[in-house]
Image (cartoon, helix red, strand yellow):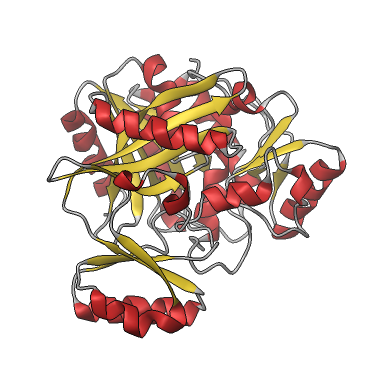
Length: 388
């Protein structure tokens, strides 16, 4: 089973990859360390380059799931258990002259700027919420204003809920964290309080659009491959906008793909190389609007890369966790049975029993079937067995 493209084809033979969100105190990044460590193996199957993974993703259980799915098990030469081991490996790669691909900019003392596969500051800038105004055609950008925090009291008088609040400085965000949806004045007051407490220098106030469809359109670019459209998925989020997964979409409006091409071409013109995914919505009025730009590997990148190889029209990217460590064995058996059925492709299995004090095991994978109903029925069974 082969992906459409590998990270080696995109980033080159000298590239190495660290998927992990940096250890930091950024309030707009997910801070569940086990969840972050579980995601480090998410792109291993499409990598074909060394990936820095947590050792709990490299146990016999993970190997068995890959073998059952017909995926070759690729032993990773670089792994870590602790923050110290993680940063030491980044520094060793820098000393060896490796080209390091990452998801987020790291502190300079952990990863020097010349070690990135592209200009590090530009990479961070492209991923900030504020830069969208400078990068793309204004017709694709919702009505918004970026206000310095000390001027908020005056600026907010011109806005009425529903609105969306986002950090307006150069702080990176992930998974919907740092995006606060405010449906009424009480939620708006609370959202502004959170940003002030976090010490955010400026805040974006953006209209909350009436959404008909929400697409994550993904593209790749390298000098050799040029700009290539990977495909699109519909995002699954909770009521607060926190990311929960993706469902493959084959029929995407041409105007959505064209908007994505426009954004990717603009990013490439500013020096971007790699995988990027853009959250594009079609409003009730039929307009295409860009609400978030992610110039990095996305949650559903592996799903889009494997879509043709899986041979099924419906794919769903999702993550699951055992309810508690005592249920790790039952959780693994449930996942294993679904993999054996040929309906669930494993990307990462984070073995909670690897630790001296066990934690809940986690699974990252792709459902593939003829209908969404079939997937949803099996997913309900999985969640029920897992105590949800």
